[in-house]
Structure formats: C-alpha cells, structure tokens
Amino acid sequence: MKLFSCPSCSHVLFFENVVCERCNHALGYEPASNAMLALEPLGGGWTAVGAKSDDRPWRYCANYDHGVCNWMVSADQDETFCLACRHNLVVPNLADASNVALWQKMEIAKRRLFYSLLRLKLPLESRAEHPEGLGFEFLSNDDATGQNVMTGHDDGLITIALAEADDAERENRRTSMGEPYRTLLGHFRHEIGHWYWDRLVRDGGALEACRSVFGDDSQDYNQALQAHYANGPKPGWQNEYVSHYAAAHPWEDFAETWAHYLHITDTLDTGRSWGFRVDPRVDREDLLTAKIDFDVFSPNTTITEIVESWLALSGALNALNRSMGAADPYPFVLSESVVSKLSFIHELVHGRVAHGATGSDLPDTPDIEPAPTPDDRQVA
Image (cartoon, rainbow, N blue to C red):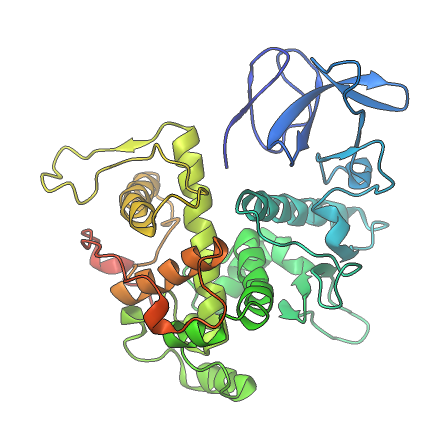
C-alpha cells in the first residue's frame, strides 16, 4: 500500500483517511487514478481541489454514510456504490451498533484487497455482469438455530463470517486450529483466490498448466478436506507448500499461494513507498540485502526481484516484531517448490500463461539463494 499526500497542502495521508489533519479538507480515494482527492463542497456533491471547470464532480460511495468507505464515485454516473462496495450482496444488520464496528473492519480489509486487484488490472465482474461474478456476504451466526457461518467461496459468492472481525474470536480460532497466521485481509485474499482460479485458470485455458504446478484438482475435494482434518498436516509439507492447509487439496494450494502473492506484493509496495532499504551489517553475502525501488505491480518486474526482496524485507519485519515482543508478521518459509508456485501466479496475473499451455511452456523456476531463517520459523 502506497503512501499518499494531500493535493491541497502536501501533508502525508494514509489509505483510510477521510480528513486532512493539516488543512481540514475532506478526503476520498479515487481508484482509477490511485490517488487521494482533497475535496470541497459543490452543490450536493464534491469537487476536487485543483480541478478544472470541466472536470467531473464526485460523490462518496453510499457506504460512506455508515462510516465504512471513503472511496469516490463519479457524480455523473447512476451507480451509488464504489468499485469495491458494488460487490456487496449482504451486509450485517446495522440496527445492532456492534455490527457496524465489525463491518468497518471488514470493509477496511476488503478495500485493501481491491487496491491490489486494481493495481494488477485483474478482472472484477459483479454478479450483475456475470452469473458467477464476484459477490460478498458478511453474515452473523444465527443464535436462534445454532447455525454457525462458515467463511468460504461458492461460484463467485464469498461468505465471510462477521465473527472473524472480532479480534479475540479470530485469535481463538487461530489458536484452536493451529494456524500461525489468521487475519481478515488474509481471508479475503485466500477466498478470492478460489474465484480467480475459476476465472483465470478454468475459464482462461490455463488448467493443464496449473495442474502441472499445483497437482490434479479433479480429486474429490470434500474427501481431501475430511482427510486433512482427520489426519493432520501432510508430513514434510514445508518442503512443498506455503502452509499446512495448502497441502489439503490443489484448490487450497492455489488459493493459499494466491493469498501469499498478494501479501508479498502489497507489502513490497508499502516498502517502496516508505523508501525501505534492507542492508544488514553482518550480511556479507547479501542474502538479506535489498533496495525496494521497483514497481511490484508492473508486468516488467520479475518474480526473482519480488522473492529476493521479500526474503530480505520479511526477515527484517519479523526481527523488528520480535524486538517488540510480538509475533512474526510473516511466519512462513518459501521453499523452492513454493517459489515455483508463486512464479506461476505471477505469470498468470500478468496474462502470460497462454491458453492451453502445459507445464513445459512455463518459465523456469527462478534460482533463489535461500536466506538464513531461525529454526522456529518452520511453523507447523
């Protein structure tokens, strides 16, 4: 996520800001230009500071009224919801004030997801545009029936349990399921990976190429999950998969790897915006040295640049967190097999997996020198 600046006074801004703390202008994010607009009232809407007389007027997304969105919509369009919120199908019952705070956390994570998807220029059909278009349902458990909401994906419909926005409940679930990492943003990135498997792999002619990397997805999915939960993680999964859940089925391997690709690219985008340079004094072989000065979303950026920089940056982030007594933000190890899978995702999102391609048509796995990692980072 990049840093922004106020067009009126040049004050540093962050993605969720709605008011500039220096000049007090209202703020809104405009996704087409990937910019924050400083706004002034114009009739019933807004105009951007510095706009020309013939520039378009703006209005906030309709969900701004609930305090959950700061994205802008062109006032000359009929659409009242922004590019992210137009995909919402079910939102929490807003008569319950506690739901609004949880929904706000949901929307913050979702908008950060959409930031990356838009920067990568990925397709984003809605349910109105495609029978399996992307839609979100944010649901609460039904206390009357005892039915618990399960987070998941089904033909473009992504359900996220509202309870996942409760930090204590999510941590409880993370611990009980033996997961090293569980966040709202991680849920969004994982579940949308299933949707992009449908759009880019199944419908995009990349099925055989994907199977050559992730395995045969035609194996029974429900049986595979039952075996995973009954028997525990596959022995030695760290050598082949980015997480133990990825070993359950090729669909989950793809979705987990997709999520990690977004973790990595968005965090490197943040590192570039902050001017990060990682250059440890004791790293004489430059295994943990990187200057993050490239556009990670550019199709010209190679997976080698991405992974080498990520090994350095994630190592530094983990070390900084440990100095504060906090958990590693990235408690994962990228094996050679995982890097190969990330390479496939990189080629896929940039449209370089040809229709009908096979494994032999894919680029070679980049030769990445393994970075030193503490033994306790080999999480199970």
